[in-house]
Image 1 (spheres, rainbow, N blue to C red):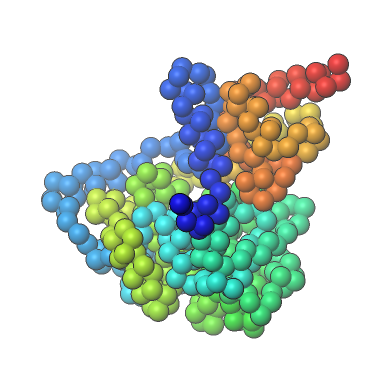
Image 2 (tube, rainbow, N blue to C red; image 1 turned 45 degrees about the horizontal axis):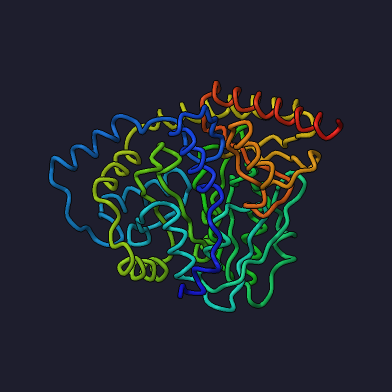
Length: 390
């Protein structure tokens, strides 16, 4: 008796594996979790204090559906300051996490018969959200180091193309789209009149002197076609606070507000005031996280490439390594499942991101945990190889 819509949706492999790993931990198992996309840092103290102050000040009642005015203004100022995009507060909306923002966008823009170009590998929920909106995901291959180019996008454009999902830095690969290619992609969107959903949730996590470029900052024509999505979850270690935000034209924002008014209403008041503190105070905590992730990134890249039958392209952004395990002869789902059961290490199978023969490891964990996890993977792969040879 369930709806076809729900039956057609696949479970999130990232959350499923993370949940299983945490359950094993509760049972007393010594599990190393390298699966979830969640910083291991604590929310900065000043942000927590702002939330406590909001509670003590009785900011506990309904707010406008799209968020408190102060936060919408702060997001608009953030877009101008950090991304060089001029959004008015009326062109900003607050939702219950970055995932909720993306869902609202898909539902507000896509219709049955529309096509959304989705570069591969992709974050697991993009595909399912496109399907929930009754649209068709059109998968677009990237190059050997997971880079997206305008030519690749051009090959997938049809008269049904309504949207391109642009996620740079990318989850799961860590790839950062080159600035020249972003400019060419903008030209394509303008020429063929399709939206660009620019998911910039990992914008601060870029390395090797790379810089993030917001496609909406290029000119007014592409800004009108761009929907910029972000959240405080990764940047400020606030994954559980559930505050995402969107910048777009007023018509799109209004449509998203109408949708949200009948689903969740406003996001948590307390979390909104915490987000306001995060966006309007010094960003030292962010710089500290980026430095730590960079050190871990270099360690993970080097160590993965020392493991027999595993190789990994150096990630340029985010906090994931997307490792090639095809030489082990195992399917990614079998690799991840057996690794958790037998070696107590949690990773995510690449098939969840549209690519067989890969696994995603998060280095949003302490260097000690990362080292333990990679040592176990090394030992486990060697044992599997020895068993197959024997």
